[in-house]
Length: 224
Ligand code: TMP
Image 1 (cartoon, rainbow, N blue to C red):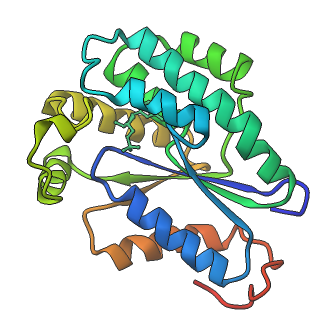
Image 2 (tube, rainbow, N blue to C red; image 1 turned 135 degrees about the horizontal axis):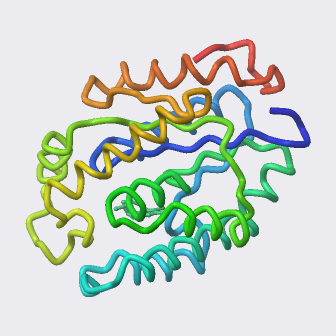
């Protein structure tokens, strides 16, 4: 990271894998260390994205075909990258996104079967093809993740997104997708076992990240 290019970090994984908790902790720690941080997510990192999120995740739209789903995520991503991520990176900020393009690869390609050529074309031509500096895949068996989601105390099925209601084989394909991405891009994508205590998961993320952090945070002599 330097003043001109910033640092782009993404958190990926299936539902219930703890991305949001880890992201919050990371943002808190980096801010404490003096770094300028933008914490964002997909879908829904912009105003337009929040409206798109409602449409794509609503359990009223279970009949949405995979291509429509992909186009909505890509619309969200395009708006997100152009109006929020790139300007922040140009300002030299650290941008951390809870999900990004690897989610489209895992969900729309590996789980729903949309061809990679279609994803690659849209990502490159519309969304700018921006590649994160580092990506953490919080990996967990879907059985464990589903147990976690249920523990959150959601008992009303209408409050579950259509993805949370998907059956186990779907979540297995998503997990396989993320692991495959990591296998193909080991430099960028780090798999973190997420069924460990929260602090242990955070330490693993921090270890990978320290190597990338510049020494321009106000208190950057501190480590994680
Ligand atoms: P979350 O924000 O609670 O993690 O939920 C987002 C859901 O959207 C999750 O089920 C994964 C799904 N998703 C895709 O299918 N494709 C994508 O490109 C993205 C960003 C998310």
